[in-house]
Length: 334
Image (tube, rainbow, N blue to C red; front, side, top):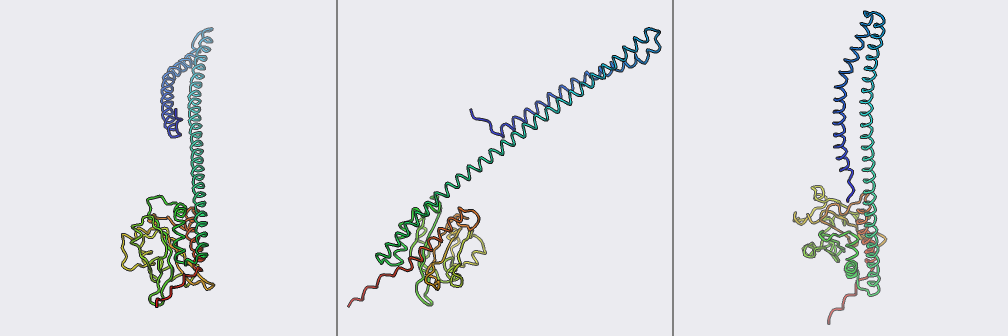
């Protein structure tokens, strides 16, 4: 049989308290009915004692003792009844208060136990995500090494890196299977008016949605282009947005011909620049998005920071990828 919960016991105690008070009231009413008779007896005794002076001896002494005794016994019994009422009421209140205190202590203990259990579960989940993060980084670094050895080129190595590490990356980001989660790497290409950030690697949890995404961004447009512009002035620039569905965000990260329905797929953002050379030239951008608000948040919650820091890890590895030379162009046919 399951043990009752504190709430059930509290409800039971309330019922018992009401029953106890009802019984106590009934007892008091019964005692009060006797009080009237005791008072009358005491008054009669006092009257007899007062009239004893009119009685001839030795009856006056007998009457005085009899009347005084009746008055004294009546007064003592009334006092005893009042004291018993006070004692029973005090004991009942003390017992109820003690039970209430015990229940409150039990509830606090259960709450503390629940918090400890939740904290332990959160810590275990975080440890699992951290192991997956380390596994993903290991796979990506080994892929980069192969890229250097085979001279596959920076763009191809970046794409291979994401493909090889996609499973631990998703697990490290705590992907739940229903979320639209994206991870993309952009590389700076072109020159002058044609310069833009071109997507060279990506993973979408819903591939059909990803295929409709933009392949490139110009400077100052969208999250990618805006971070590009900011990072040129400040290499430490980054974008971490817990919630993007606001007029302020839309103003700060303008998109040409924006599709409002599609923009709702990017409710939380984390993006970092890929810097190259001693001059910190912006080589590219790593960006992760989710349709789940607060997926990426740079706040005190270590689980939230973990997702943001994973995006930073990828950006730092891409700075190594940027050093891989592209394959030599094939000579023109003669």
